[in-house]
Length: 142
Image (cartoon, rainbow, N blue to C red; front, side):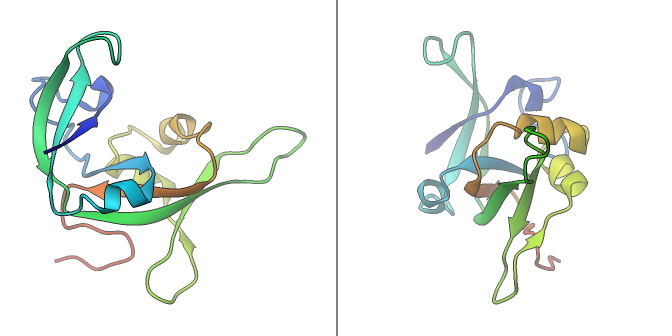
């Protein structure tokens, strides 16, 4: 079973599952996560200081799929880096931007602003969306 650290801010009040509506998690290193598709993930949080304390397993979720997404920051304006944007490519179509509010809600954030602040310092490049359900961006699900 693969272990995945999760911030305690994404854990429900009882501490035994993720927040309702958090159906995926964005992570760096798409190639690493893609090889674990179809396996189970033990989601955990640290009891204290990371890497120096016990890992508390919150729940076990299936890694249903891993979707490739690209993070780009807007051009800098007057020396300030602008908010990040996420783009996804499906099939042979050109990459299209993901709706920030939808991506934020599905990742457990209260709003798009909180979400963009979280990813503000992430470097541009390919990331992975770890899906815990059958939902995928750019595809119809039933």
